[in-house]
Image (cartoon, rainbow, N blue to C red):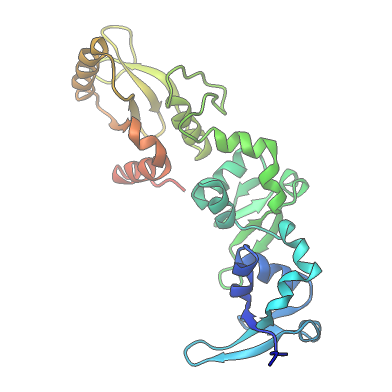
Length: 280
C-alpha cells in the first residue's frame, strides 16, 4: 500500500538533508515570508502553510515547525547559496575561529568594531554584507553571502593565516617559514608589532651584543620568538645561546614552536591571556 503522506522534517533536519547550516535555512525562509519570529519563537505565515509547513509537538521542546521532506527540491532552496552566513558559519567553512574571521574581515575594510559587536562598512555592503542586531542584546553583527567564499581578496587573506603563508598582509618581510603566518595573525587581531627587533641585555634597543626577537609589541612590551623545527647542528648552539639571553630581557616572552602553527590562533590567544592581554 502506498503512503500518500510525505515525511515531515524540522527546519534543522531539512537543512541537514540538503547539506546547509540550519541558520541559513531559517534566514532564507524568514526572508521568503514563510516564517516569522514572534517573542522569540518561530511561527508559520499563511505562505508557509501553503508551502506545506505545519506544526509538530515534542514532550520536551514543545511545538515546532515541520516541513514535507519533498520541500528539499523546492525552487526556493536554489537561493540558499546566497543565504546569509554569520561569522561562525564562515569560520566553519574557512577553518578559522569566528573571532578571527571578524578581525580578518576588518583588515579587508569590510567590517569595523563597535562598542560591542561589529558594523558593516560601505565596502562591506558592496560585497554583500548585511547589518543585523541580536534580538536579546541589541549587539550588532554581520552576515555575508556564501558567494563571499569565492572572493579572491578573502581567499588570499585566509591563506595568509595558514602555516605555509609566504606574504605578510602588512608589508613586512619575513624570510623564515612560519614567521609570515605569525605576522599576519598579529596584524589581523590589531596588535602593533616590529619584526626582527634587537635588544641589549637590559631590555633597551641597541647594537651592543644584541639579542634579536622575531617580533616585539611595544604597546604591551611583549616579545615573540619562533623556533623552526629541526634546526641544523650549527644553529642548535646559537638557539640555546639565544634562549639563555632571552631570560635577561625585561619583558614578557612568548615562544612558538613549529608544530603549534597548525593551531596558532588558539596558541597565541591563550599565551596572551596568560600575561594579562585579551585578544578580541
